[in-house]
Image 1 (spheres, helix red, strand yellow):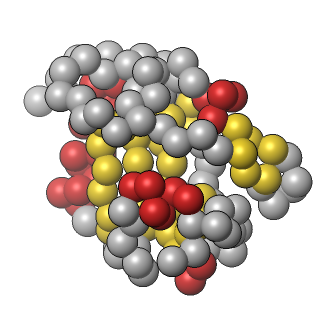
Image 2 (cartoon, rainbow, N blue to C red; image 1 turned 90 degrees about the vertical axis):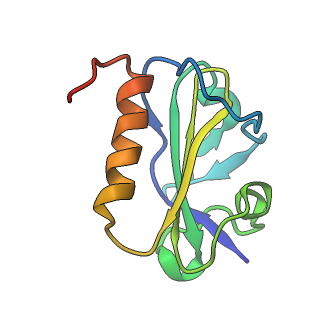
Image 3 (spheres, rainbow, N blue to C red; image 1 turned 120 degrees about the horizontal axis):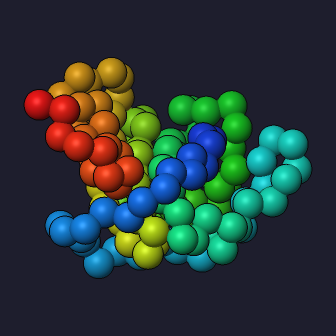
Length: 121
């Protein structure tokens, strides 16, 4: 499956303590639609949110070799969302085909924790 890392690499600020998986961010270099290079080293030390899909899911297909899809087991025909901590460890992964309020809430909770925001409940 060809994948597309079409979103934006969002830089957040703080790492997540606790429930880590041991899956690390792969080494990568991708060029965006403006021919700018983005490398894994550019984002290390920051929290990183990546969203990828197969080629049907985006106009901006940056990962044509499918390295992210292979490394992280992307589901076809879905947006695959990965959240990495400051140590470049995968902290949350989900795949959605549309807006799912429960999964979105879980993602927001993970990001809030990464940012060190207090519990909103």
